[in-house]
Image (cartoon, rainbow, N blue to C red; front, side):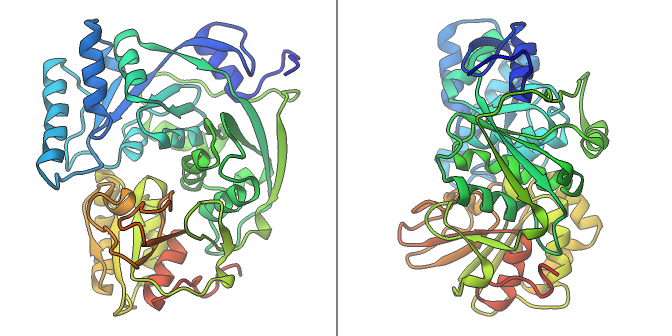
Length: 421
């Protein structure tokens, strides 16, 4: 790619962290601010680290058990126990026990590890979530995480960027989930392979931080290395409440070079659903007529307080359909407490939903909410691959909190009344 001196957000952050004048396609060794592992990916990272026989950068390490907690069987209990032993042996302060943490990506935000300009990796593909707060964040393997435990830095190939220009404002019950499903449907699950989706435009002012977190979370579902937003006044207001330490926002240069540019008018968006078995199979909800067995509200994609508020608004005074089980899981202990204080959890319980403490739960099909053969679930999660939530002959339909809640009431996939108005 031709170099002009002007840079994208990705190029700037990786230049800053490597102390090099880096552009798309360059290989750099960059200083990492934080590395996160969870109960699934941590044991292998620990093994690889121990084999290195190295010193440890304990202040950069964040340990969050979330996938199979509370532990569902002996194997998952052993995984979690390994995290506790490692944290104790190496004096890792940033360990978040069950009941004091939640889903890893939300914990990273809640506990202030994410801030503008930072370089963060996680041994989980949805680490790209943190790009919503103007960080360069990406998922890596457990062995790469172990390398950062030992060295505090890692090599990266600087990705090229696709500019996504947003204008307008979303209508009622239309959200960031609908935007990202529409975008992935347009470019495909490989449309951003090893690229950054970089968002821009006047429409950003009408896209709340919670929605940006959802959008960045699913950048990887288009193959993206990262999904990054600039830091505007909403970002800065949010970050100042949570972020640890010093940070500095990073803006793209006006003359930065992009691989591609795509324009979206938020006014034109409608409630969407991604049909089985890929996130790119998006359709307007109005074109879908599917009965469901389960409705899942939660996960690192849509388990935030704003999501729960929208769902509670829709379901208050109503009941979950007799043929449906609805599972509601706040994404972190902080969000759980806030939802309880606001009376949201009581609304869900009165409606006939099952409410759980924070965990990944049904999202990955391994714990609490597994689907049987032939069952269908409408879910606020990020993936709907074959067998993702259970039996290989089950089906997962991805949608927003508003659509999931309205569907739980109706017993079939629908948009809430007034959506798009």
